[in-house]
Image (cartoon, rainbow, N blue to C red; front, top):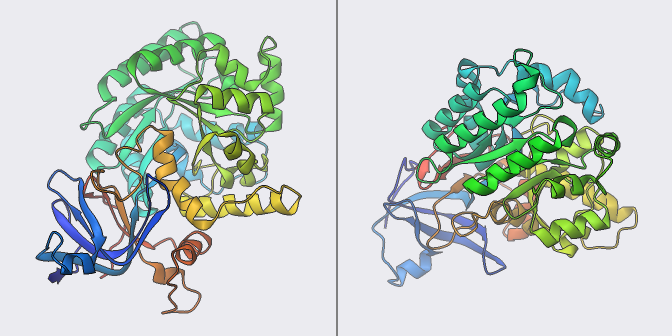
Length: 448
């Protein structure tokens, strides 16, 4: 077996590295010296140890040797706001509605045309890839031209992205639109964007109808956007129960609803293609209804702590059968890294445990599953991505664990310890390469 040290730009190729991945059947695969073969179509053709190949199982002549890097599935970010990236880390401690008015709506107002997206979106997608994110579910702004530009940037970059134009008709930062036409215009523009982009790039790009949240949307906007999502096979994404003041406002705006989740239920918005961000303060009734309808949730622990919104009782939700993945929630989340999001989530759950919640907190390997295969399951894409298994599309990242060591050259052999270092001591440069369907993404800095 001969070897190269240059990461491949596209398939076919075979990578030699340490491998750590969850498995669809349960458990994890850890190979200290493994091989992953990617075929010409960008799918994983084989996964195993070097010893297996040495014994004649699918012999290989050339492998790209990435050791001591760790090959992992690409991370899945289920909730981020594309126009907000420049304000990441600003406004800590403000409650949600104040933070939106002071930091976010002015920023999104600037995302008003194609030129705005053409400046920001390519840099944002490179930043996602540098953080190890190969799949992202994103909010845009209210302006349709900027969404077209964002989709063009995603198509060019190669990231797997699902994006939606933000829909708001009860309140909006679009000062140019005629209030009497805002509902009709937003629905029409969203439908047109979905027709152009949902399923583009052979399914690598998707559309999500995106009513911002109940505070900014009428029942008609919620109902009609949910109907469009169902009829087109697209996703439907919004926020729920992030902040206690938000919940009080929703109760005032929708007095006929039993609770926050019931607002979306009455709109026909609950279901397996729906991703609700946050869900920090669900009642037992709301939790039961989300589980019953198969509705999915994006857990955003970093932003929930940053804005002091609350701590999701994650163990309770998982015990009830809720399908949950992770979201960075930039810019309320201060950084794009899903590894850092795992860390925030682990700290939050440990705090609940100290406060008396006796449910079991997630292990580092279980956080890895939630950030990869779990996120893919939220999107209904776990048959394609989320793990390094034969037949799946090669959405991969190569991570340098040496950068997480407290002392140089200090290695850990146990896979749980390895993952613990990656999530509790993430380094901004530790993702050295990222691929979607075997195509290398621009962003991560390769160091031989």
